[in-house]
Amino acid sequence: MLAWLVSWISMIFVRIPTPRKTRELFIKLIMKLSRPVMVTGGSGLVGQALRELRPDWIYVDSKMFGNLTKIENVRKMFDHCDPCRVVHLASNNGGILKNMNNPMRVFEDNLLMDLNILGEAARRNTPRIINILSTVLQTPRHQSNEAFSQTKQVSEFYSKIINNNTKTRVTCLYPPNIYGPGDNFSLSDGAVIPALIHRAHLANRDGKSLEVLGSGKALRQFMHARDLARIIVWAVEHPRKLPPNIICCERAEYSIEYVASLIAKEYGLEIEFTPGPDGQEERWAPPSPINFPKPEFNIETGIVDTVNWFKKMNPS
Image (cartoon, rainbow, N blue to C red; front, side, top):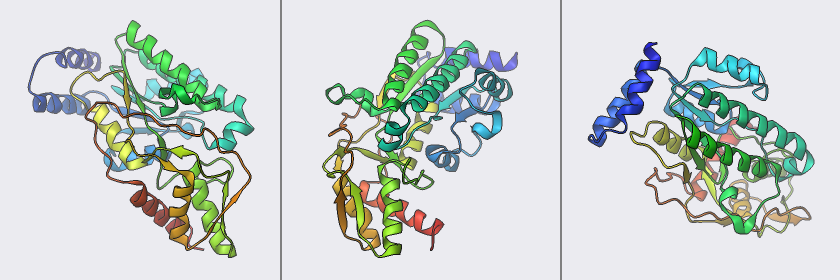
């Protein structure tokens, strides 16, 4: 009863004209005294970065409550955590090869997780959800056929339904390609930067060049995981009602060739292009006119940070 009353008061309070600092202090107090912030996908790349900023939040993964594609596990998770905020990071995602090799599994897993988690949060009147999507959805000139991107279009639409028909407010954050320490460095399932770092590590060990699949001409926007974590904290603790959609990109975009050259430089390697898929030629998305925290890492410093972490974890 007390938790419900505090949540109700908080939803009323954010609509009252009061000084910004007063709102921020009130929101933080409410979050401390009432219910926790729950992060799904808490053991993943961005979840690990969030732990450094907000160690008191609850970080959930499949080991705690089981596979979140099953609604009974999601209900068990909400019963146990009873959150006042939900950060939805959980997904089945990877690089272009993973989307090509098993598109049905990628689509079905993400669809079920998004519907289960967002829907259950709305049915329980959770005041705020931060839903992490993809900038691919915001670039209609360059539509993607990847299973992950198609699923997130459904998630985007479902978020609108929740905003229009319930008391729960969903804010969708649209980051670009995320990378950083703790990433999935799988050669087959990893995204472009972690997969290239792993290849560079092996090439350096074996005395070979860094092989880059495709032409290297495709353009992408990137963001370090710690920078996205800072934006998520800002969104969770924001004292006012947020817009339903926020694109979190900077304007700069980089070719895969340039990114590979930065990674090769850290290992003292040459680059060799081999036949393979390029994916979309471009995925550029304009940043939102919202004053979200600006990145602390650019692509050059972010690559160095990630490579140094990988070298530390893999000294041989």
